[in-house]
Each structure stands twice: as structure tokens, then as C-alpha cells.
Image (cartoon, rainbow, N blue to C red; front, side):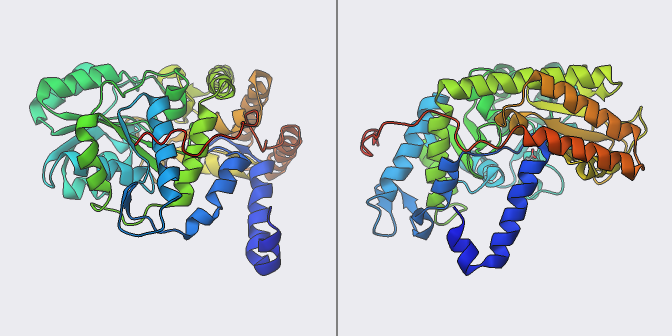
Length: 428
Ligand code: DSN
């Protein structure tokens, strides 16, 4: 796969091989990461990276779009099919610009957005004070309650007081199910648009394991590389009435040429997600997450909300008196990779928070199941018990290497496809 790189850029070849070895030899528990198939990687590395395609299929500003129009239409068609949406825009470079595009499509600078605080598990682009989203727009934030749950009555009361123009649902560090229907109702009650960011949940939504926001939101935004298991990218879904203004908000509104190689890889991932194999995968993510959370509780860890409904587990380390950052770094030395994170109402700053966020999408892709979750909980607990004891940490890292060596990173997730006409789904 890397022969040209090895020959023409041995330095980068060496670094990429090192990263591949790292990804294979550690337990990757960052809930926003995954392993993609070789088919997705092939599309990402294809000749489509050579093409400029500003505009949309049939309406480009550059010639030579005989193939790229089809590629983008395949991606859009697959997205609308599996998410049951009227329209898809597959051009956003990432989740952050997808969110900005959603706001740009619906409101004007200076109008008001209302999303979850960063400290409660919201995203920077949900109106955090350090984000451009709170500089271009007025931003107000809701929080989770003392138990770590979204409180829909409080959200409704805040919406009535603040009268936002957009209510944002969706999170990056919330371990419980989200009722998008209630968010939709609150938005209607106060005359706001509802934008839903399902970056973390999209794979579970596609598999029918989490309620979809598509019927209840004006625009749905997602990244494509988390539970959805595609390339790094963003995507927007919307009702037909918003399609034209959404497309305009992305291009020419805030982006130039789309990354056609990424769009092709998104299309590949969407086809992979539209299979029985993906459904089983998503079910196992949840089983693993539940088991891991139960075992961590048995080992004496406090979890925000006491458990999880999704792929995310948020450990509150305050009772253990271990700073989240130190714990994440010790775990990393033990080859267990998570990320330090604030816990709701954390008195500490985001740079030195009291939480650790972990999740199961990547280890599930490697084929790990409940018995391995028991082992992982034990390994995490032993790191916590041996903070500062580098010899013990080193012993744990050897056990992790043994475990990971039994679960090689797979190249493929689905049975090979029959060749289809590239024109088969050119519905646009
Ligand atoms: N940075 C992502 C995450 O890790 O959840 C959110 O964009």
C-alpha cells in the first residue's frame, strides 16, 4: 500500500508506519476515533484529490466534472437514503464548518444560538465563548443538571426567556440518550430553528439504535469519522425547504472547492453503514460500552450519570483525587488512549479537568467484546492504583500489547460488493 511513499518520501513513510504501529498496538478509547476500512482509505487516497469541483453536481464553476458529479451524487444519494433525509450536503470539510454552515443557512450574524455548554459536553461550535460561533452570533448556553442529565424543562424555560433563533441539540461528551423530539418541540414553541449535531451518534442513528433527529430538526450536522466509521469529514442533512439555502451557505458561503476524495470516501463509508454487518457492529459498540461502564463502577470509579446509553463513558475522578490530565497521560504510557475532559459543573478549567472520556467504537471495530471490556476495566483501574509507579505502568502496557496483538486491525468490514452501474443512483 505504501510502496511509492517508501520510495519517494522515506521520512514520511517511516512516520506513517510508526503511527500505524501505534494505532495497532494501543487500546484506542477516544470515543470520537475509529478505524476505517481499506476501501475508505483507498478512496481518500485516490486521484479525486487532484480535482477542483467548486459548485454542485450539474452546476460547477470548473469543467471536467463528468466523474465527480457522479461521485457526489452517489454520496448524496446514499446519505439521504440511510438517514431518511430530504437533502444532503456532503461538502463540509469537518463538523465545525458543517455547524457554522447550518447557522449561516438559517440566521444572520448577530442573531442568537442556544447550545449546550462546553463544560456540560457541548462542542466549541455550539456557542462556546472562545469560538467564532459566539463572536458572529449571540450565544446562550444551557447546562446539564446536577446529576449530569439534560433537563428539558430547564432548557424550555431558558429558551422562553432567551428567545434564541436556533436551538442546538447534540453533544460531544454526554453519555445518555438525547430526546431530539423534545428539542424540536421546544424550538417550535419559541419560534426557533432546531439544528442537531449528531457527530458522535450518527453511526448509532443509522443503525436505529438511537432516535434520529431528522424528523425533528431543520438541519442535522455530523462528522463522518466517529461511530459512522468514515473518513475525516462533515455532512449536513436537511428538509427540502432548506436545501437551496444550506447549499449556498456552504458554497460559496464559506468554502471553496469540495474535497472530492473525501466525498468519495464518505460514499464508501455510507455504503458500509447500510449493511447488516454495520448494524451488528453498532449493537456491539453499545454492549461493550455498557459492560465497560458496569465493570468500571465495580472497580470503584464514579461515572457521570452512573452509566451510559451510548458509546461514551465519562469518568468523574474527583473522589479518586486523580487529575484527569495526569490520568490520561499515565494511561497513554500504558498504551490505553483516552482524553481528559471536564465533567459537568467541574470547578477545574478545561486544561486541567477532573474527568476522563473514553468510548468503545474503535476497540469494537477490532472485534473486542464483553470479555475484553472486563480486561480493559481492570487495566484502567490498575493504572489508577499505580499512578507514579512507572514499573507497574510499563507492565500494564505489556499486557495491552498482548491483548491488542490478539485483535488485529481489520482491513474490511463487509462482504465484497457486486459491481454496480455508477449511474444507478444518479437521482439528481
Ligand atoms: N473533537 C471531537 C470529539 O472528540 O468529540 C468533537 O468535535
